[in-house]
Image 1: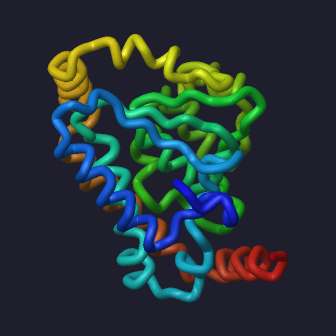
Image 2: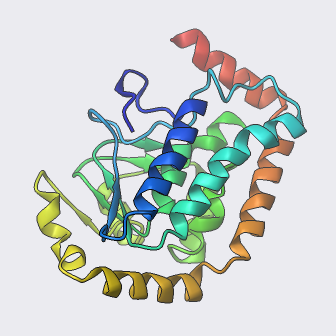
Length: 231
């Protein structure tokens, strides 16, 4: 994600670019592993509030959010292993995006959190649904409800992060990349069958719908206006 000037916030253009990139990788039978990271020193700050703005009714909000739900669903059920390299903070939708990956590796001291609750919202791209398939349910519930920022140590403790890295992260990923393409695809399909059935798409759709229902609230509009005024 290469928008460091806005902390790699997801714009409508980036939604399309992610879909296009994923499709290209899927069509390359030689690829064993997909990694996702951010340019500069931030992973992703969530949705760009100039695109994902607060002045929308429920149906329009649903349509706006749904494109990133499709991105997260595609990433979650990707045919090869996926890894989020958390080179810097992830906030809100950025944390949802990282959750859609199979594994997460993080730099020491980096914090991540589902900060949507501080904007009068809930998760809206399907990342909340996926979180319950990544870590124990009570940890997921508490993290979403509290809107807390967790540091790298806490994220490892709850099982959301698999390890830390400094620079040579490819060395840590060798256990994955040393396998054949056929092996990694078989292992991934086993995981999808156990944890990410097709029905998860419906659950993610419902999450988007619930978020769109609270999009047009005074709390959300006020939080968005406060953020934009501070720029």
